[in-house]
Length: 151
Image 1 (spheres, rainbow, N blue to C red):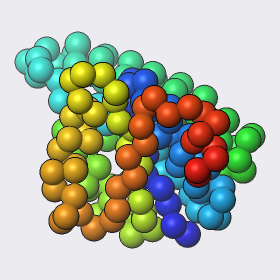
Image 2: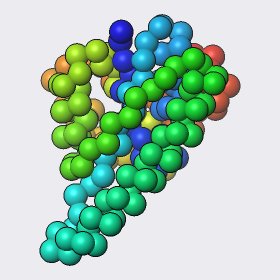
Image 3: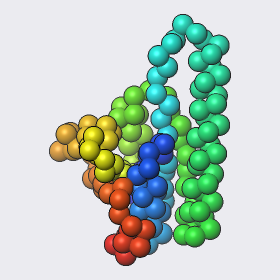
Image 4: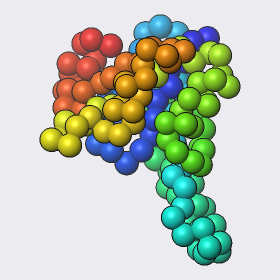
C-alpha cells in the first residue's frame, strides 16, 4: 500500500497538509503516516527537566494525533499511523522515508507569511532533485473547499 507521509507540527499550514494527505489516501486506497519530530533540547545538562519536557511533548503530540486520526477514520476511512522522533526535522523525515518503502509521497504544508514557506519546505525543496520520493506542497491559505476539489 502506498503511504502519504505528512509532518505534524504546531504550524497553521499543517492542517491543510493533513487534509490533503487524508483525501488522497482515501481516493487512492492508500495510507497515511504522520511524523512528529521533537527538536533536540538546548539544555542537555538539565537531564531531569529535559525528560519531563520530552514526556510532555509526546503527550501533546499524541493528543493532536488523536484529533486528526479520529477525523481521518470517521470522515475518510483512513487509519493513520503515528511516528514520533527526536532530532532535526529534515534528518528525521529522510530517515522515516528510507525506513518505510511504502511511503510514496511526502506532503508538506507551506506557510504564507512573509518569512517564507517554512524551514522544512525550504530545506527539502533545495534538495528535492535527490529525494527518493516526490513532495507535494500544499498552500497553507488554500480553502478547504478548493483542497477537496483538487484532492
